[in-house]
Amino acid sequence: QSALTQPASVSGSPGQSITISCTGTSSDVGSYNLVSWYQQHPGKAPKLMIYEGSKRPSGVSNRFSGSKSGNTASLTISGLQAEDEADYYCCSYAGSSTNYVFGTGTKVTVL
Amino acid sequence: EVQLVQSGAEVKKPGESLKISCKGSGYSFTSYWIGWVRQMPGKGLEWMGIIYPGDSDTRYSPSFQGQVTISADKSISTAYLQWSSLKASDTAMYYCVRRPEDGDYFDYWGQGTLVTVSS
Image 1 (tube, rainbow over the protein chains, first blue to last red):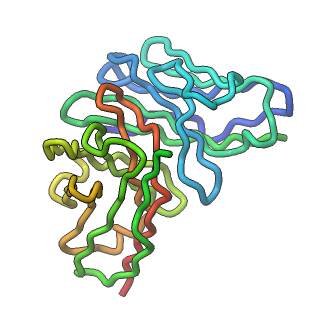
Image 2 (image 1 turned 90 degrees about the horizontal axis):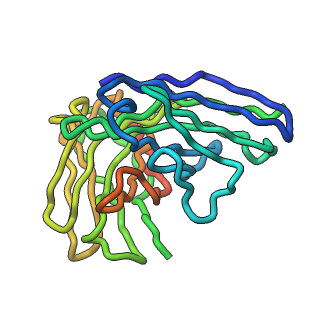
């Protein structure tokens, strides 16, 4: 099972919106609405930001939103802030034999 | 407050065995899955496997099947990840994660355990 494909880096200015893509296959992203997104600051453990494609856990800013189209899921960060600078990973359920597959990760830089 | 507290950093030699732990608190340990995620230095997250402490149902990623063993002791709310013979390529940060019984996402993460394997 190959990792889901994400862009290596995305950047934006404060206040702008950016979108991170996460491309899988019909065996994972395309088959299930079970993509989650995680934020990881340097030296820290990842944090859940979006689950089941578009749901936000309690306490996560509504500036973060998720969507999916076909085999590609997306994370949008609106009103970009300095604190959003981090690595972001998508993850999808991939069936009973593989269970889960993570994305390759995207470094978000706030200019 | 939900917490997953992992055991401390380890330095081992190739060929040695190792068992790291993840203790859950603040919730019903037997009602959630506990998974393990590897992050090699400077690299991304990799799914390793998962266990349901309630009945010890365990699933492994094909990439890690036979390479590690995942177990749990529900009497002390602790999950484990173990190796019988470490390799230098096992050097990584290992995170335990909590997965809701009816959800396919990881809502809580441990702080990570750094395993260094070097001769």
